[in-house]
Image (cartoon, rainbow, N blue to C red; front, side, top):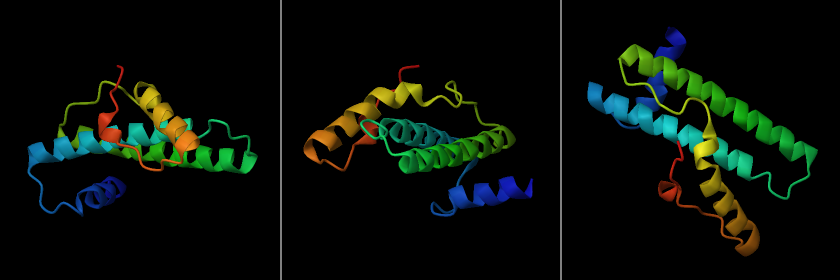
Length: 120
């Protein structure tokens, strides 16, 4: 319980006091962001055959999965509605692949993740 309280404090630390309804919206945004992060991690493997970078990607993915588990615990404790798409970043993979392809072709480093649409 202390671990969840600490993680909750970390999520809400930068946004100040949050009303109960706003907490659920913030947690839903954090959940969505974690899914997009995992899709981006997956997409970054395009054209990469480095075992060292594959290991780093696996560790990054594990960290995002751990964060998702904590977010779910906090959502449950806050009485928030649970996400429909549980732990699967597949809905954002097409957006992530488009961004990664553009980065590889044109050196474009930034991606507008707000444009990514979830294919639930």
